[in-house]
Image (cartoon, rainbow, N blue to C red; front, side, top):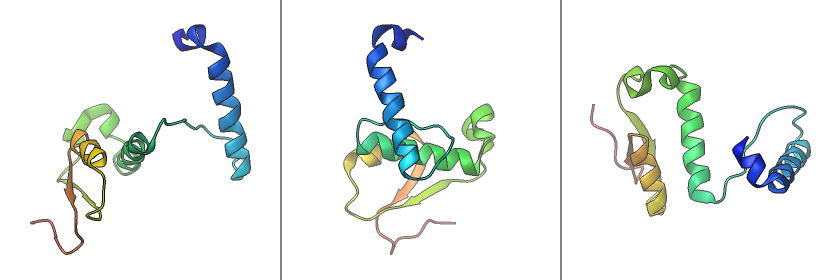
Length: 102
């Protein structure tokens, strides 16, 4: 509510833009978020994927996930993306030739 009080026009514009984007891709209902850039978008994607695979993480934190989360990327991944995976406790392998140790 505080954000709406500070910037009501921007909140309404964001809502309408996201509604139009959902309509363009064929979603009748749903929720969405407007991300300010690629790095934060990638982090959101990682968080959504983690929640889809481990919904109990929301209640119990990382202890709800048995084992190690692993992400494979190309060697061209940005440094900011590396920070995102570190924040999420995900082990990152840059080249597909590497493999995690058992």
